[in-house]
Length: 166
Image (cartoon, rainbow, N blue to C red; front, side, top):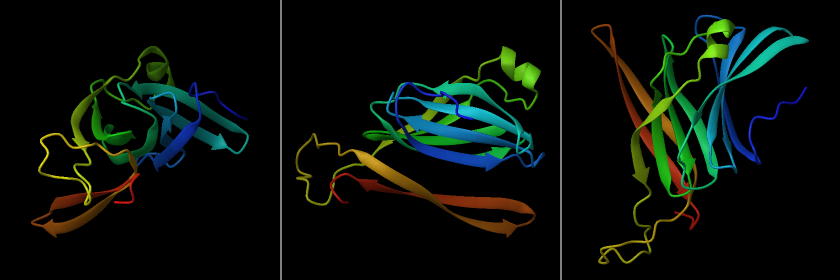
């Protein structure tokens, strides 16, 4: 079965399984149409599954080449996306529900927490006030978690690859 979830080529997909139900997952997709979309997939068996559109992450400056669900905890998520020159971090402003009846009536809305650019590349003239923003093609998030006094302290580092090879 195929689903039409974007109005253009899909460049990136990331899925994460629900921590409460193994037969549920969220899929984030990034597209040529300058949008990223969140989908909920519930699976009963190989022949019985349902994919629902949960919401869209708007306002990308170009093709969405990379998406990632960075965290999911008690239905609270943080997403990252790349829209050409920027890495965006998002959080839903409406609650996510695994109930299909609830999701069918409510679209998730999200707000951008931050927008980061790649900064100047090693061969750019950094004495210029304005630098050329290079397209960001991919990224990954590295994390280091330590356990102290039964609280998790997570440090994250984002590594990005730019079109000029830096």
